Amino acid sequence: MENKKIKVPEPIVNIIDLALYYGKMKALKGINLDVSRKKITSFIGPSGCGKSTLIRCLNRLNDLIESVTIEGSIRIDGKDIYDPAIDVTELRRRVGMVFQKPNPFPKTIYENVIYGPRIVGIGKKGVLDEICEKALKKAALWEEVKDRLHTNALDLSGGQQQRICIARAIAMEPEIILLDEPCSALDPIATAKIEDMLVELKRDYTVIIVTHNMQQAARISDFTGFFMLGELVEFNVTTEIFTNPREKQTEDYITGRFG
Amino acid sequence: MTREAYHKALKSLEDEVLLMGEMVTNAIRNSVEALQKRDINTSREIVKNDLLINKKRFDIEEKCISLIATQQPMAVDLRELTSILSIITDLERMGDHAEGIAKINILMGNEPLVKPLIDIPRMTEIGLSMLDKCLKAFINRDTETARRICNEDDQVDALHDQIYRELLVLMMENPRIIHMATYLTWVSHNLERIADRVTNIAERIVFMVTGKMEEINVSKY
Image (cartoon, rainbow over all chains, first blue to last red):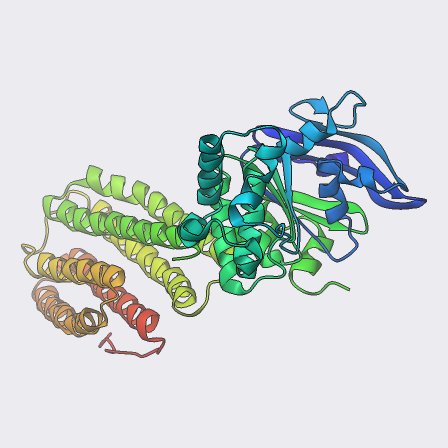
């Protein structure tokens, strides 16, 4: 696998010989790749290829599953995040996550966005207002909701709810934002809005996205990794993956000849 | 507007086509000026610089392919990208015609011209004016101008006829100048082809806007 690793500019995440087992089943088989800072990196591949499992390793969400064991290491800014001395709560603040289905809390838009900052002890209304506005602006939602911040977030459309979830992640000022199929429940226009927003977000954040929709990976990401059966088949600059992949398996998948 | 980054990429591709158009315009203009002045150094320069035009074409082509592969362009955007692929091929060939004129000047060396150049610069001006209007029509999605340009090609064809006849008469009068006169017919032929390629581009613009492939004016040659 090591020979498939490519050099990326300014790596923020180093994944080194990562293997993950669900019980005895090996779900990730020796993954080696670096993620570039303030770029969009996408992971594609057929269902069960390990792409979601991999991003869930990046903020240690897999810790919550008892049967999981992990070998190898993941470094963020040079520090091993599986080091016992790591504060997992702090790790999850630095590495935010957005899931497939929008999951806003049954609270107002405002309360959703400032949920994290409030939990970590920010109480001043002025500060929270500012965080809320800034996060909603970055999530490209401010103009649509600024006059109804105190209405229930569940009244919003699916696309807006997903952007609320992104704003909620941004409010914690993470360095890395993980997105696991963020558009799979959305229509094409809502998807285009989220994609535009992600391209904007990479000015400030490192974005890692898992997607079933390889056209989405093609459209927005700078780097793409193609996974199959727990292995990283190919990782490269996105245009290379989609115009001239090195591996036949990648070519077969992106041209629809897979299987 | 959604998909901002993608639309920006399309726009910057248009700018590159204009830039390539400018490179080709300069090559054509300079090649004929160098011929008039019998300036062999400039001609050599044009031959060398043709590589830059070729490179530009490959750069644009690569970007088009990347956009098609990664952005799933549809409808007018898809037509624009496939049209650009065709437009840059024509522009690149026009650059080759300019290079051809430069090479003829080099071949002619120090021998005097068989006649003063009058119609050749005129053909050049018409061809370049067609190209200039064509590039503007591309940016403005202006089918009316594009169609008009195709008809202007008739003037270039007529001048080519005239030059050919004139040179034929000179050759019959004095067979010793045949090789030099033949060189000039080649120059005229290059200019005639340049104008034809402009009409190809104009037809592409009409296709890009309307989605219909039409041959607007068939060149006499």
